[in-house]
Image: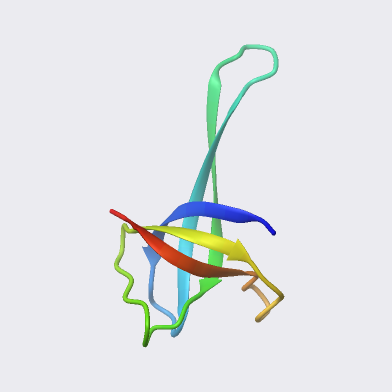
Amino acid sequence: MKKLIGKVISLKTVNTAIVQVERKWAHPLYQKLVKRSKKYACDFDASTMQLALGEMVELAETRPLSKTKRFKVVNKIGK
């Protein structure tokens, strides 16, 4: 099961948080660190977990919950 860490960038929809995950990798020829980011629509229970914009969260892969949601917020890490 895949686990990712990212930052909450949107909470506009019900029970869904948009999380941006950044990864760094070295370019194969020039060895410069390259930063890439990807946005994931993640499910979370608003009644048990209070999220705020800019918080770091841990995501876990899950079964398809909707057309775009394939991840679930497991826990909050902090700011």
